[in-house]
Image 1 (cartoon, helix red, strand yellow):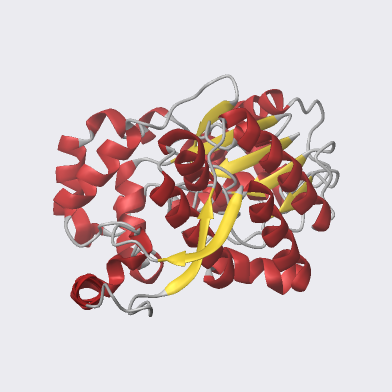
Image 2 (cartoon, rainbow, N blue to C red; image 1 turned 180 degrees about the vertical axis):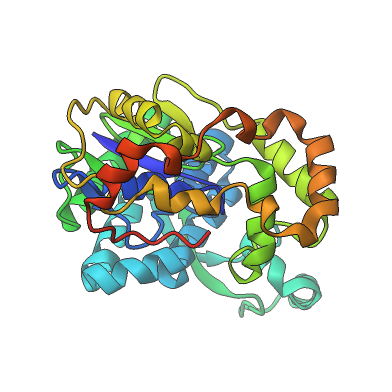
Length: 354
């Protein structure tokens, strides 16, 4: 079984990762986020163009973009730091197994990969047409636009899924991770659509970690260097961002939504729900070593510490009231003497700065 831990930035997903690190028998990939499936121009996008859109020029563009992503993308660079040339051999073999035809052809004015050339490319394209018309009697072909490899591939979802499933399994094998074991992967799926990508595994599940909006916002203000992916300059923009994202964060038979605050204030019940969802019967053999609710509690209810954001927080409370965490109804884990005693008996090695 593979399970992806999913978040949306400052949502506390690392808390679940750290909790599950407490199991010595769970294999994991958490050196960096596993974005291969859902990053822009990644496998999910490739699948859409080859099996859903099925437009010949768009298919060519999608394949070119996937190749470029593997050549220059951050995820691919991270994989090379682990696997070296074996990663390049893997992705080239994968994309070649999807390509049905390739040839040295001429760029199309409608290729998405040519949009960056803008007006210069269009001028060259039309100039070439004019020169060809003027030299129609010439035996020589005038070529001003670029000749390069063109790709063609159209297939059913079943065909794409079969090939991709085989190669995903091979990639995990290169990472010494067997999908017959319990394998945890950081950000394997998108938090707003965990279903996309699950078809590439025999048994896949996702845990989405949600966090109440006031603390997400305040954390983004306190750590702006790590929060540029969200609109934290304007509270109105943040409210729109958070509200519309929440519309798509849902539980399903293969997806569990966990409230970050519950893992701290309702630790035992929430940890039990996680274990039940993943089919784990035992407690972590290294419990509290990497996640300790008595430590992480200081990263909740942040509005009481950073009062300089009080006016923004008030607006969030008015506009996002249905997503607020009811801190008044829960007891601090620091008041649970048994929990504190258990947690203090373990050498804590976690790190949670958000």
